[in-house]
Amino acid sequence: MQEIILVGCGGCMREIAWQIEEQKKEEDGWNIIGYVDRIPPEGNQEILVGKRKIPYLGNDDFLLQKSEKTNVAICVGEPSLRKKIADKLKKNVFLCFPNLILGNNKICEDVKMGQGCIISMDARISTNVTLGDFVFLNTGSMVCHDGTLGDFVTLSPRATLAGNVQIGNCSEIGMGTNVRQGISIGENTIVGAGSVIVKDIEGNVTVAGVPAKKIRG
Ligand SMILES: CC(C)(COP(=O)(O)OP(=O)(O)OC[C@H]1O[C@@H](n2cnc3c(N)ncnc32)[C@H](O)[C@@H]1OP(=O)(O)O)[C@@H](O)C(=O)NCCC(=O)NCCS
Image (tube, rainbow, N blue to C red; front, top):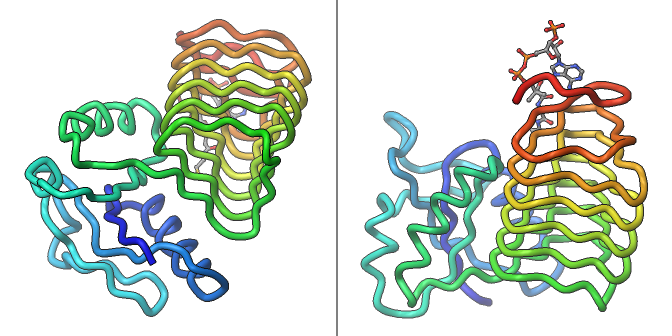
């Protein structure tokens, strides 16, 4: 079983840790060594996930000083923060960012994926989909045929992209959102929870609602 260090100490990290532990019960998955964060949760450095205690290993310097191959998963849902952490950690060539394919999902064998992606439990990825680096598909999200997701895109729980949807780097799609086929969403865009996207969306905006309208940017 390969070892991995998680980055982050919030709910996102705890959910991913739980899914890694669940996967281990069924198949040969990942062994979590501990977690790294800028500041550990006050007064309680060890994090309890189910029955598993995850030790605190230190801040980013712990990883930046590594001089042997070390697997790392950046467990941060917010795209711009995930990018900031990845840009810093990628400076150490000993750090590897494997794609974490967690339990009970279905991924077509022709899907292309960069590095550092996290595909959560119950996600679905259909045929001829391309994911960039550090894409995070949360539980129950779905990417239908011919989709393209840029680097650091986050799909929140149960977000659904119909066929041939394109999403730019660092954009985040809220939970339960549905995106109509053929739509393009620009970079650094936030789509609110429960939205329905029926028109292309420019970059650097926040949209929400049914149908989604611009609320910021
Ligand atoms: C869209 C979002 C980012 C906006 O957050 P915000 O910038 O703090 O905006 P506010 O809460 O101040 O809301 C601004 C306006 O947009 C409306 N709005 C906010 N979120 C909305 C949503 N999801 N759908 C419809 N309208 C929404 C608010 O009602 C408010 O309207 P008003 O000005 O008429 O009162 C946030 O509400 C959201 O939906 N985030 C996604 C949450 C999610 O999926 N999390 C996943 C965790 S795993």
